[in-house]
Length: 596
Image 1 (cartoon, one colour):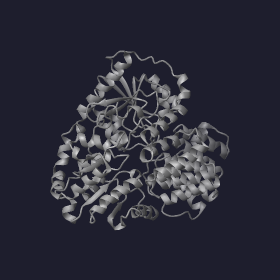
Image 2 (cartoon, one colour):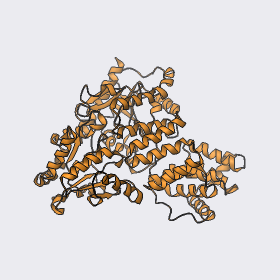
Image 3 (cartoon, rainbow, N blue to C red):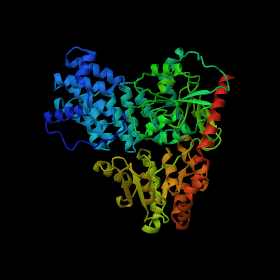
Image 4 (tube, rainbow, N blue to C red):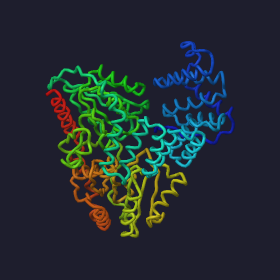
């Protein structure tokens, strides 16, 4: 339900149906879509409903340009066909064109103001642009028209999650599931939100993951088939990575050095890409691997059959319960060995996934086995390898404290991780250092309602707005933001990961709070592998004390800024060849276990 966006919003509000329709058709003409030729090829009945229905079918198959041609034919016959306008918006959204998607939805709503689906889809696009207040209004209008609209409740939940309100999000997801219990996507969203909330124990979170498996995997187990893969412990292994994130995304950042370092004499690599978006990262990864299979258009059953035909020995999931995952393909057990890795910081709950890759810092033996349906496979050092962005700015010689005269704390993680309990602890820290500031990067902060809500949450803990530096995310050279802070604060119970490594790379010390499960110990494995055990707190009071002590030690901050990048580069965290060799050894041993 979330999409990569790449275009500016419309220049202004709708002024007339004709002007908006003219713009849509002009844009379509510019795309050189041969709608008439396409109609002749398929020869559907010459009526708008049939063209629209054919467009829906083609869009479901991932044939987006052909679907657009069908919708154009429908609109040529019936310009006021609201459904065709709305469906065309879905295709533009799938292609990453938010601008024209919004145009189509708004046109549909001019024609039919109570069109619940168009309101919901418009809300999704506005949400992705950070216009959370406007998005919420769209979802409310959708629910006013259709009180049983489960998807609108789900999207409300996603918007709440973006605002750092996981518990409100979970309440929305439960409403959606009460209306549509078989919606796996909403289940996924709720499971992810539970990891962000501090209200649930690891046992409660795991129980919910097992309920997901009972509902969606258990009915499929009777159809599991024997695998015909040759059980040779020494053969060249066929490994398949399944992900929607082979694009500009943190998962791609971590998996790219692995894909580039694989020993192709021992491993034949397949990437199953579950997304339509293609960017420079996607193109680069396509060149690295031997087999590239786009699979967004395939059903779970069809993808499982393709994996069987490809003879995959080890199938690795890189998404877990995040958006656009293919866990229901894994639930069909298409490969003899299935592995959860990297993209989700908790058990999948599925019994069909045999192993989950971790390490002894994130999950010391005996700590979390009871919260995993998979067997934990601990790598000898870290569970990941970090590759710093090639365009990284240099680290300044002087810390911001030396320029500003006061210390600046910062957290550049997804603000959804900043719960009220996190704010409460940060407020205690700021109270001990009255002149300190706190810098945060928040999606949608340029929305006045979002800013007021964030400031209000801090004000309730006694933190005045003038002590906050609230910034919108930036795509270009985002690492330069780290040059504005002295000390980074890791959120909890959902720690940072990519952000934590970026923080250290930019010479900024990070303070983390060690928790009791993987999600809350990603900061532990990062800092211990980097030789920074002194920055790991075991209690909330120690978390505040470490940050306070650092803030009062300008010489230490200065020296850390000078050495952190060099230290990180010398650790196993940035040795792609060594890490990939360890990962390959794990794959080989998993396969040998299967053979035996």
